[in-house]
Amino acid sequence: MMTAVREVSVFGDAIAYFNEAAALLDLDPGIRRILTKPSRQIIFAIPFQRDNGELEVFTGYRVQYNFARGPAKGGIRYHPGVTLDEVTALAFWMTWKCAVVDLPFGGGKGGVTCDPATLSQGELERITRRYAAELVEVVGPDKDVPAPDVGTNPQIMAWFMDTYSMHTRQHVPGVVTGKPLAIGGSRGRVEATGRGVSLVALAQMRRMGIDPAGAKVAIQGFGNVGSVAAKMFVDAGCIVVAISDVTGGYYNPSGLDIAGATAYAQEHHSLDGYRGGERVTNEVLLELPCDVLVPAALEKQLTLANARDVRAKLIVEGANGPTTPDADHIFKERGIIVIPDIVANAGGVTVSYFEWVQDRAGYFWKESEVNERLADVLLENFAKISEIAELRGVPLRTAAYMLAIDRVVASMNTRGVYA
Ligand code: NAD
Image 1 (cartoon, protein in one colour):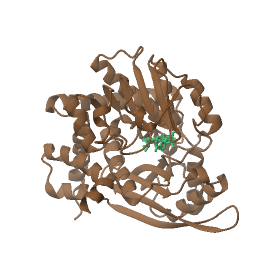
Image 2 (cartoon, rainbow, N blue to C red):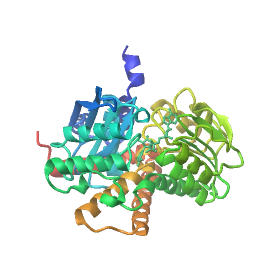
Image 3 (cartoon, rainbow, N blue to C red):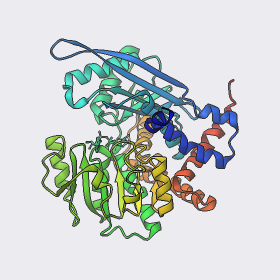
């Protein structure tokens, strides 16, 4: 039974990565105890009215993992697989992600167990407003700042911001990030995560002597992160040989037409029926010959079952938690470099931070300024991680956790532990 629980626990896998780095840092056992427990977990019912008038109840979650460096920060996921375990793991990762790029935030995450594809816009709006209303006391620009994640988007953030503002009787754009531009969103936010994925990938490719011109890239997941990363790779001269979404994958060893695939996905709300490449499954996509593999869908895609069959030289984790610790060890043995999620997809939260800053100042930046500052933050911290990896002889993931843990612990120790 214990094994079964361990096998399905996303939070269990997340803690395993933390423990590896904590051991090398000689972390105080008391601090370690605090850091391996979420500060606050909230589970609540979300009653809402279906379009046909029926009342339905879904379950909502918000986990605020750590506040040492600032307000909690992290997305809201609408997906049938959302559980407390998953949301906790995602909030845990947000803690390290914010710290590894040196943002003044702690870690949080939220979600609703639902399938947004089966819900109308009206139903989504009612669910979102009730979700936000339930959290009014515990979120806010100085408490916890949500953002989009899988299954949520700028419109959902707009409904969240409006509900919070109505309840608190003031205009509070900084309560969420990833908003539409019309209500205080940041230029460049929609593209930020995919842009960040390609920025760190290209930096690492340069270190490994992989010429971007003609380098082959396979991408699992063609949503916000995957589709933007695909475009950025093409702009850098790479060939995107495979893409996929929940309906399956598409492969062309000579390169797919990414602009065409993006237009198709936008028009049809998925890649289903796309004819630009040979059909492959999501499992086969991960094992295709390529230089760079970007998992950009969900957790636990690279596992003990397929890690030996991966043919990429470099894995860039666009998704959160796509690699299990078992698979990670195999990649280390096989000399496959992994840029971990907490750095690879930190572009999103970095521009979310810029959005929060702009909302609080009431002064908005040009897109070129956002992109320039994003590149500065990501590449400066990625260089620090690479340096630690080299100095300590550890993989990039362990080095990233070491840097992040060091920063969180420095804040905790400076503030003092109120215990
Ligand atoms: P999204 O909802 O826009 O896209 C998700 C994509 O994954 C879609 O193409 C979907 O069809 C596909 N997908 C879903 N289930 C799948 C499955 N079982 N197999 C293959 N593909 C599947 O979400 P997103 O915002 O692009 O997020 C993708 C990942 O990136 C998630 O792990 C998310 O936590 C992470 N992430 C997102 C952001 C952001 O700013 N959007 C930031 C950091 C990390």
